[in-house]
Image 1 (cartoon, helix red, strand yellow):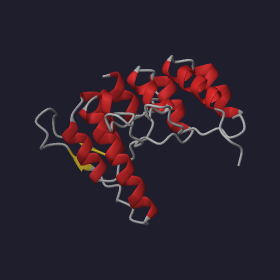
Image 2 (image 1 turned 135 degrees about the vertical axis):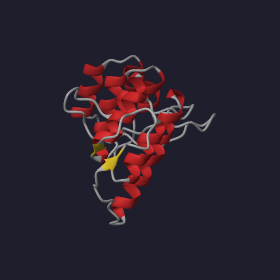
Image 3 (image 1 turned 90 degrees about the vertical axis):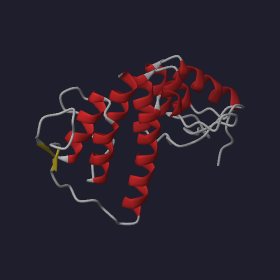
Length: 173
């Protein structure tokens, strides 16, 4: 395995932090020898962490779509990439990892429709889990998001109207 060039990785982290999407995409599409998408600098920050902290949402999504790990903690505060963005995003981070663990063990949740009649902030309606997840993210309603994930929603489902994932919706709201 090729050794990682620390200078190259530092530049990549700076590009992610500054929202230089084209540069980040170039590196991801043609990684240099020894490239590590989840490499951490001296503070334990990854490119995804820095992109999230600086609210570089398009870069964060690009990194996530290329396999950046959401739950790597920094060395000082033990925060994940999403911890700086609010409680809902930290919870989504945990849910994402739980969902992946369950799928790896072969325990798939059912994709039933969910009634939102018991939700005080909405009128009675029935939504598939993925739609309820998106609605909960747009409304910043953690109860809806939890209910959707328990029913089998996928947190990386893309809203076909906006092309955005729940992660990006929550970062933006």
